[in-house]
Amino acid sequence: MSKTDAGSNGAPPPTGGGGTGGLRFENSFWGEKDKGLEVIMGRLRAGKHVTEELIALFKERAAIEEDYSKRLTKLAKTFDTSEEGGTLRESIDVVRRELETSARVHLDTANEIRTKLEKPLGEFLVGQSSVRKTHQTSLERQLKAKHQLTAAVVKARERYDKSCRDVAQHSDLANQPGLPQKDLDKARSRLDRAQNHSRQCDADYQHGVERLADSHRRWVDDFRVACNESQRLEEERIDTSRSYLWNFTNMLSSACVQDDEAQERVRSSLEKCNAHQDLQTFIETSTTGSDIPVPPSYVNYYTKTAERSNSGAYSPGGFAPPLSINEISPPTSPPAAFSGSGGGGGVGSSSFGSFGGGGGSDRPHQPFALGGLGGLFKGRRGSEAPSAVSSNAGPPSAAVPSGVPSYLTTTTNNNTMSYLSDTAASSAAPYQATSEVGASEFDDGESFVYDPYDFAEDVPRLFSVRALYDYKSQAPEELNIARDQIVPVIATHEDGWWEGLATERGRQRKGLFPSNFVERVK
Image (cartoon, rainbow, N blue to C red; front, side, top):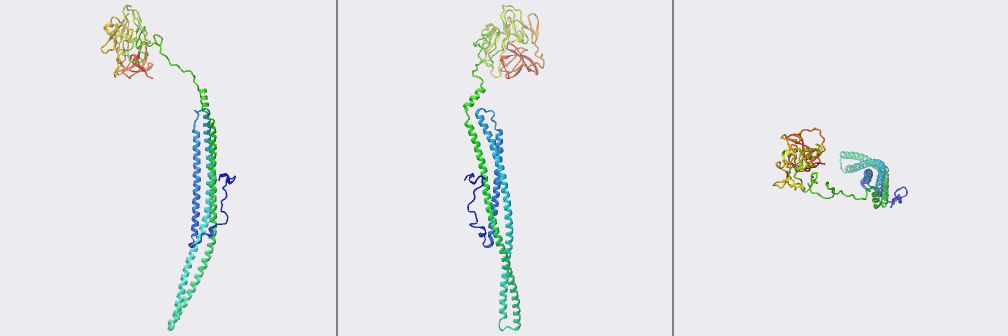
């Protein structure tokens, strides 16, 4: 039967078997020892416990509905779909709104259970308990008095029966023939006392029976009333419990119907969801273009074409530095910096400028191993280029760059390239360093002194580099660097030599180092 079968008010249909017919409490709980009262009171106590269980059921279900409502509300608030768009976003918004609606429905259900079921049923139980206790107390008091009167009647009868036996015994003695007059008088005297006592016991016995009859009559009347009242209480309790459970079911059913309607609205929204339409909208609103970018191509620095050149290829400006520090064959020497023609060797530097000499034009040019200031000091110790010394296996040997005259290079036993020795360079070097460490003397007699400790503490650091190989200084103006060492750079030069800071012998100093031995630190 659906909830609408009971009528618009949602009340349950009437129960069958009602009326005054059938078995009744007042006719069914008599018998010996008055056990009917105990049975009826046990039934009422059991009904009280069942009603308490129903109240606990309503209370717990209301708490569950309230907690479920709170969790649905929290879920709806934390359900973030702002990153979605299009028709799917609309459907998800419907889901969120229906979550909020369902939360309100279940909260209303919790409040309805408390106000219409739990609280009224508790009040009903209190009223029934009061009536039950009133009848139970009265009946128990009467039953106790009835039992006491019954016990008194039983004792009175015992006394009465005993007195009657005494009268009969004394009567036999008094009527015994041939009894002396003196004994006969005694026997008659005892018979008179026995008869008087028997008459008293008889009176007591009759009075007790009468009192017991009155008590029993009152007990029967009150017990019949209590039976009828108990039956009425039980009928009312059962009907009330049934009605409350019916309403409880209707409340939950209504919540389920509203939940189903909410899900139907979600399904209707999902039917309108279109993946193709959403993606088309996304593409139209977020497109970044349809042209595929072309990666940059290689351009030779010297020829300005896509022609590849070997590492260290000779150019009019001197020996070009390697294309990359990650070439297959890492360099074994720092970059050369000398360029120019005619009598003087030019030394290019972004920090120190260029210096020219007046040597003869028929003398071959010797490239300095150092650019910038580094080139000023190579005449002192020859033009032998420094070689890379790795902390592990060391970088592989590099071939002699193409275009370099043979008289400018030598080959050692370990097949590494170096530039002219001190003896060979003496006829080609345009400058000669003085005996003073870090000083160079020019052709016109001027000298330049490089002081590695002459710099400001707050000298700007352009960036930092990490050494890829060990480098051992070839002159006082150069730095010793170890593989993986971090070096702050304070100046860069076009010839490939950079100037940085390092700590040697406990003091910070500046100095030059080849840039193709390091990589920038990001």
